[in-house]
Length: 296
Image (cartoon, rainbow, N blue to C red; front, top):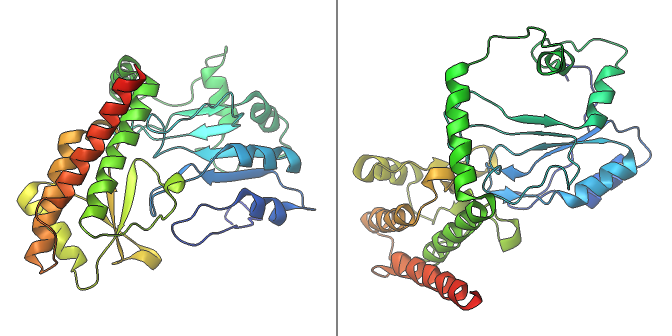
């Protein structure tokens, strides 16, 4: 790599998380400094459990680095309890603040590793040893802070706290369940087959045979002002990626999207039972509301 590091890649088929056991086998007998992975993998809509990776990192004597860009404030996460050494995210996803900031937290164990380095970090931008002096007691100058973005992030975090993390996690879970119920009722398949592996903020939908990927996405944008993403790499032209994160994870948006997709599919000759997607989503919401009422 550019940093002269030796990287061991452990991969899994598209639509499945990388098994922590495979990581353990790949690192066995080697000096492993860090283990890193994405909690929420947006290119395929996969969520990966953190706890098994913490166990493997402990066994290999490695720091654990977790990318929570697409999961923070939408998927259950406890940095301290799960003992994540370096956890970073993005302000623009489920937090719903403007882009341009990357929240990060660093454990005492990671700080100690930084301080004991025998060589300087080659990139000033990624040198946390200088940043630590900035946020520490010395308050040494490091960069000009983006004040307007900080205020925006604070307001977004205030809204998160007002809603409550657990309630926010549940909102994302419930809205994705309704989306999936609608998608499947229209006869569409999902890339991620195991429900436990599905990332609540991004749902990967398989594009039916004979349907023009770009045409559907353009029609959604032009007629309904809805933008979804396509796949890339090995799944380019094979999946649609539907985001439900932060402010966008709302019941009206789910129902509007399902109705709009039905229209787009019908326009291309795909047979969809009239109102099937919206109807299934409404039933999904009703089941959750009934269960909540019973539990009270």
